Length: 171
Image (cartoon, rainbow, N blue to C red):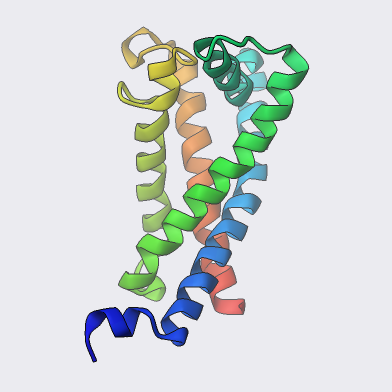
């Protein structure tokens, strides 16, 4: 059987659909504690306004698009974006993990690696939040801002990895 035929088998497609669905579900679940952790941490360091990464990102994206948004719309769109973003990372995690064999990659390792990838994609010099100006470049950030960004990426990624493992075993 050639590779194209094997990939198009109903069994292969079903496994792919289940993996992506588990990943999206894990991402949605992981998006909730990520917000809680970041908000609590923001309060603890006296910079809760810096924990509002999503609304700041949406505001900056709208500004770059030439259509500034009222604050209420920034928050609404940030909520939608947050769960879309969480679903995307959950699905990508599942797609990366499945070929390796999910039992072979401990959630602590997989989640930590995902956290580094998310931090890089969002908060590094090449990251979306940094490039749009929603976040300051790393060399201009205060230590508590970097802490908030790392904890946002890692709390999401670790929760995602453990939830994905649980879903994979139960479902």
